[in-house]
Length: 346
Image 1: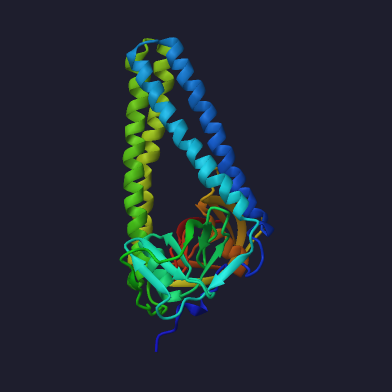
Image 2 (image 1 turned 120 degrees about the horizontal axis):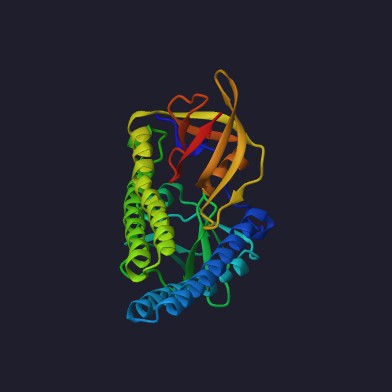
């Protein structure tokens, strides 16, 4: 009989406690709010400068694009980030759906809530998390707010997804079959391999976006404005964005190689610094120590998913693919969970 993934320790919210008791949750929302506000200020100033330097049709079109992006970010601020901050004050509620209580319709999952009245939690999840939930049969939510919105999270993660409380499941839903969760090689793990496909698609999409953005920046500086200083600055900025975009698939190729070829290894680890979330609220950084077969080494987490960091903090374990060595990078993650990242050992 294969060992199950239940032996993999993971971070979980504490049932009955508000998410706001963890300072990291509040810092994530604050970083997201500040990023949106700062970027909106930059877009407004940039649009005004472009219109002032060249009040023509090109500038008007460029300013219109910036205005559309600003409106989108306003929507994110007032309908996602700020409501999330309010929901953090609600206590976490654990759900363990039984037979007939976990239904799926496409990307939407419906979970029956306890109580005399029919109520369902409906949330959209990516394929990797739907597979995870089908095996775990365990999830958390906080809320609902007056509009019926909730934040939904799964074990092993820190960032929640918005869902709603409804009186009926999503139309067309069918029961989700329970998935076995043996502790297997990463290449045979449906959650890990599905998550890797999602990361690959997302990275290629972001790479294309960054390259197009680089081309647009270069065109603005070198074709719209006949100013040497402007052209030089925008050319440098365009190169930075293009290189950043092209490096994304390279990183995913490293993750893919480790998943295909290397076995999981569990290491004892601790964090020596607090987790510092990035501006997006999805990634962060920290420094810690890990116990290797040859002794202790420093591990640096730079721009890694917060899901990985909170699991190291909560469990004092770091799962890696392959044989870790000082002075190199290693792919870290969690067997059976949608978490993969590159970390540095010193």
